[in-house]
Image (tube, rainbow, N blue to C red):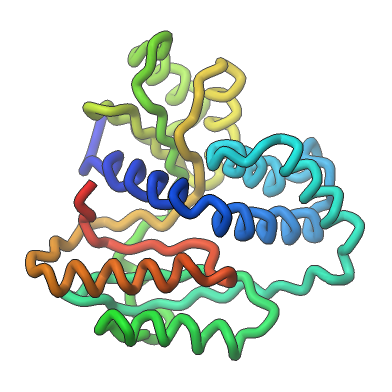
Length: 243
Protein backbone atom coordinates (compact mmCIF):
# COMPACT_ATOMS: atom_id res chain seq x y z
CA UNK A 1 0.00 0.00 0.00
CA UNK A 2 1.53 3.31 -0.96
CA UNK A 3 1.11 6.48 -2.93
CA UNK A 4 3.69 9.18 -3.53
CA UNK A 5 6.47 8.91 -0.95
CA UNK A 6 6.54 11.81 1.49
CA UNK A 7 8.82 10.17 4.07
CA UNK A 8 11.89 12.12 2.90
CA UNK A 9 10.04 15.40 3.36
CA UNK A 10 8.81 14.34 6.81
CA UNK A 11 12.36 13.45 7.85
CA UNK A 12 13.75 16.67 6.40
CA UNK A 13 11.18 18.72 8.28
CA UNK A 14 12.04 16.84 11.48
CA UNK A 15 15.75 17.56 10.99
CA UNK A 16 15.01 21.22 10.33
CA UNK A 17 13.00 21.39 13.56
CA UNK A 18 15.70 19.64 15.58
CA UNK A 19 18.20 22.24 14.40
CA UNK A 20 15.93 24.94 15.81
CA UNK A 21 14.81 23.11 18.94
CA UNK A 22 14.45 26.21 21.13
CA UNK A 23 11.96 27.74 18.73
CA UNK A 24 10.11 24.45 18.38
CA UNK A 25 9.73 24.15 22.15
CA UNK A 26 8.36 27.71 22.34
CA UNK A 27 5.74 26.87 19.73
CA UNK A 28 4.86 23.56 21.40
CA UNK A 29 4.45 25.34 24.73
CA UNK A 30 1.93 27.66 23.09
CA UNK A 31 0.04 24.70 21.60
CA UNK A 32 -0.04 22.98 24.99
CA UNK A 33 -1.37 26.14 26.63
CA UNK A 34 -4.20 26.48 24.11
CA UNK A 35 -5.11 22.80 24.46
CA UNK A 36 -5.25 23.13 28.26
CA UNK A 37 -7.49 26.18 28.01
CA UNK A 38 -9.86 24.43 25.60
CA UNK A 39 -10.08 21.05 27.31
CA UNK A 40 -8.40 21.12 30.71
CA UNK A 41 -5.02 19.84 31.98
CA UNK A 42 -5.86 16.12 32.17
CA UNK A 43 -4.82 14.33 28.95
CA UNK A 44 -7.11 11.42 29.84
CA UNK A 45 -10.06 13.75 29.25
CA UNK A 46 -8.45 15.97 26.61
CA UNK A 47 -7.63 14.18 23.34
CA UNK A 48 -6.14 17.32 21.80
CA UNK A 49 -3.75 17.74 24.72
CA UNK A 50 -2.75 14.07 24.52
CA UNK A 51 -1.92 14.42 20.82
CA UNK A 52 0.18 17.55 21.39
CA UNK A 53 2.02 15.85 24.24
CA UNK A 54 2.90 13.00 21.85
CA UNK A 55 4.02 15.54 19.26
CA UNK A 56 6.19 17.23 21.88
CA UNK A 57 7.81 13.94 22.89
CA UNK A 58 8.52 13.15 19.23
CA UNK A 59 10.25 16.55 19.05
CA UNK A 60 12.48 15.50 21.98
CA UNK A 61 10.79 17.68 24.59
CA UNK A 62 11.32 16.01 27.97
CA UNK A 63 8.38 14.79 30.04
CA UNK A 64 9.38 17.21 32.81
CA UNK A 65 9.25 20.15 30.43
CA UNK A 66 5.87 19.03 29.07
CA UNK A 67 4.44 18.68 32.58
CA UNK A 68 5.77 22.10 33.60
CA UNK A 69 4.19 23.66 30.52
CA UNK A 70 0.83 22.06 31.32
CA UNK A 71 0.92 23.15 34.97
CA UNK A 72 1.93 26.67 33.98
CA UNK A 73 -0.90 26.84 31.45
CA UNK A 74 -3.43 25.53 33.98
CA UNK A 75 -2.41 28.27 36.40
CA UNK A 76 -2.50 31.06 33.84
CA UNK A 77 -5.68 30.38 31.89
CA UNK A 78 -6.72 34.04 31.90
CA UNK A 79 -3.48 34.94 30.10
CA UNK A 80 -3.94 32.41 27.29
CA UNK A 81 -5.64 34.47 24.60
CA UNK A 82 -4.20 33.13 21.39
CA UNK A 83 -6.18 33.27 18.16
CA UNK A 84 -5.69 30.66 15.44
CA UNK A 85 -5.29 32.25 11.99
CA UNK A 86 -4.27 30.52 8.77
CA UNK A 87 -2.62 32.35 5.88
CA UNK A 88 -2.07 31.12 2.33
CA UNK A 89 0.27 32.19 -0.42
CA UNK A 90 2.75 31.32 -3.11
CA UNK A 91 6.51 31.03 -3.11
CA UNK A 92 8.80 31.07 -6.16
CA UNK A 93 7.91 28.72 -8.99
CA UNK A 94 4.27 28.63 -7.89
CA UNK A 95 4.98 26.66 -4.71
CA UNK A 96 1.81 26.66 -2.58
CA UNK A 97 2.28 27.56 1.09
CA UNK A 98 -0.06 27.33 4.10
CA UNK A 99 0.93 29.10 7.33
CA UNK A 100 -0.86 28.22 10.59
CA UNK A 101 -0.43 30.70 13.43
CA UNK A 102 -1.41 31.19 17.06
CA UNK A 103 -1.26 34.86 17.90
CA UNK A 104 -2.25 37.46 20.47
CA UNK A 105 -1.67 40.25 17.94
CA UNK A 106 -2.99 39.58 14.44
CA UNK A 107 -1.65 42.91 13.11
CA UNK A 108 1.91 41.90 14.02
CA UNK A 109 1.48 38.38 12.71
CA UNK A 110 0.06 39.23 9.29
CA UNK A 111 2.80 41.83 8.80
CA UNK A 112 5.51 39.27 9.64
CA UNK A 113 4.00 36.61 7.38
CA UNK A 114 3.67 39.07 4.49
CA UNK A 115 7.29 40.15 5.03
CA UNK A 116 8.47 36.53 4.83
CA UNK A 117 6.71 35.97 1.51
CA UNK A 118 7.98 39.25 0.11
CA UNK A 119 11.60 38.61 1.09
CA UNK A 120 11.51 35.32 -0.82
CA UNK A 121 9.88 36.70 -3.92
CA UNK A 122 6.50 35.20 -3.11
CA UNK A 123 3.14 36.70 -2.31
CA UNK A 124 0.23 36.14 0.06
CA UNK A 125 -3.06 34.96 -1.37
CA UNK A 126 -6.68 35.07 -0.36
CA UNK A 127 -8.19 32.49 1.98
CA UNK A 128 -8.82 29.35 -0.06
CA UNK A 129 -6.31 30.21 -2.77
CA UNK A 130 -4.07 27.17 -2.18
CA UNK A 131 -5.68 24.97 0.47
CA UNK A 132 -7.51 22.94 -2.19
CA UNK A 133 -4.12 21.55 -3.24
CA UNK A 134 -3.71 19.81 0.14
CA UNK A 135 -5.43 17.05 2.10
CA UNK A 136 -5.83 17.20 5.87
CA UNK A 137 -4.62 13.89 7.29
CA UNK A 138 -2.74 12.28 10.13
CA UNK A 139 0.88 11.49 9.34
CA UNK A 140 3.04 9.19 11.46
CA UNK A 141 6.66 8.43 10.61
CA UNK A 142 8.59 5.50 12.10
CA UNK A 143 12.28 4.99 11.34
CA UNK A 144 13.58 1.55 10.50
CA UNK A 145 15.25 0.14 13.60
CA UNK A 146 16.06 -3.21 15.19
CA UNK A 147 12.92 -4.74 16.61
CA UNK A 148 10.55 -2.91 14.28
CA UNK A 149 8.98 -5.55 12.04
CA UNK A 150 7.44 -4.10 8.88
CA UNK A 151 4.55 -6.54 8.60
CA UNK A 152 3.66 -6.35 12.29
CA UNK A 153 3.75 -2.54 12.22
CA UNK A 154 1.57 -2.47 9.10
CA UNK A 155 -1.05 -4.80 10.58
CA UNK A 156 -1.00 -2.92 13.89
CA UNK A 157 -1.55 0.41 12.14
CA UNK A 158 -4.26 -0.87 9.79
CA UNK A 159 -6.10 -2.67 12.58
CA UNK A 160 -6.09 0.58 14.59
CA UNK A 161 -7.68 2.46 11.70
CA UNK A 162 -4.84 3.66 9.47
CA UNK A 163 -5.76 4.57 5.90
CA UNK A 164 -2.43 3.78 4.25
CA UNK A 165 0.99 2.33 5.03
CA UNK A 166 4.16 2.80 2.99
CA UNK A 167 7.65 1.41 3.46
CA UNK A 168 10.61 3.50 2.32
CA UNK A 169 14.37 3.08 2.45
CA UNK A 170 14.68 4.86 5.81
CA UNK A 171 11.41 4.10 7.48
CA UNK A 172 7.64 3.74 7.41
CA UNK A 173 4.94 6.29 6.69
CA UNK A 174 1.47 5.77 8.14
CA UNK A 175 -1.44 7.89 6.95
CA UNK A 176 -4.75 8.25 8.78
CA UNK A 177 -7.94 10.24 8.61
CA UNK A 178 -7.78 13.03 11.23
CA UNK A 179 -10.49 11.29 13.26
CA UNK A 180 -8.44 8.06 13.48
CA UNK A 181 -5.07 9.71 14.14
CA UNK A 182 -5.11 9.47 17.95
CA UNK A 183 -6.14 5.80 17.99
CA UNK A 184 -3.42 4.79 15.52
CA UNK A 185 -0.71 6.82 17.27
CA UNK A 186 -1.66 5.38 20.66
CA UNK A 187 -1.61 1.83 19.28
CA UNK A 188 1.93 2.31 17.97
CA UNK A 189 3.10 3.95 21.21
CA UNK A 190 1.52 1.21 23.33
CA UNK A 191 3.40 -1.39 21.28
CA UNK A 192 6.64 0.34 22.33
CA UNK A 193 7.55 1.39 18.80
CA UNK A 194 9.45 4.73 18.73
CA UNK A 195 7.80 7.40 16.58
CA UNK A 196 9.90 9.84 14.55
CA UNK A 197 7.05 12.33 14.12
CA UNK A 198 3.28 12.34 14.48
CA UNK A 199 0.92 15.13 13.57
CA UNK A 200 -2.27 15.99 11.75
CA UNK A 201 -0.95 17.92 8.78
CA UNK A 202 -1.86 19.48 5.45
CA UNK A 203 -0.31 17.07 2.95
CA UNK A 204 0.15 18.21 -0.66
CA UNK A 205 -1.66 16.25 -3.36
CA UNK A 206 1.17 16.96 -5.80
CA UNK A 207 4.63 18.46 -5.37
CA UNK A 208 6.51 21.17 -7.26
CA UNK A 209 10.20 20.95 -8.12
CA UNK A 210 12.34 24.09 -8.08
CA UNK A 211 15.19 23.91 -10.58
CA UNK A 212 17.09 27.21 -10.31
CA UNK A 213 19.45 28.03 -7.42
CA UNK A 214 17.73 31.42 -7.04
CA UNK A 215 14.28 29.89 -6.59
CA UNK A 216 15.62 27.34 -4.10
CA UNK A 217 17.41 30.09 -2.17
CA UNK A 218 14.28 32.23 -2.07
CA UNK A 219 12.04 29.35 -1.01
CA UNK A 220 14.39 28.54 1.85
CA UNK A 221 14.37 32.22 2.77
CA UNK A 222 10.58 32.20 3.10
CA UNK A 223 10.62 29.03 5.21
CA UNK A 224 13.39 30.32 7.47
CA UNK A 225 11.63 33.64 8.12
CA UNK A 226 8.35 31.86 8.91
CA UNK A 227 9.92 29.21 11.14
CA UNK A 228 11.78 31.87 13.14
CA UNK A 229 8.48 33.60 13.99
CA UNK A 230 7.10 32.52 17.37
CA UNK A 231 3.53 33.17 16.16
CA UNK A 232 3.89 30.63 13.33
CA UNK A 233 3.02 27.12 14.46
CA UNK A 234 3.11 25.13 11.23
CA UNK A 235 4.19 25.74 7.66
CA UNK A 236 3.02 23.41 4.90
CA UNK A 237 4.08 23.59 1.27
CA UNK A 238 4.18 21.48 -1.87
CA UNK A 239 7.85 21.98 -2.69
CA UNK A 240 9.65 18.68 -3.18
CA UNK A 241 12.58 19.59 -0.93
CA UNK A 242 15.98 18.05 -1.36
CA UNK A 243 16.53 15.81 1.67
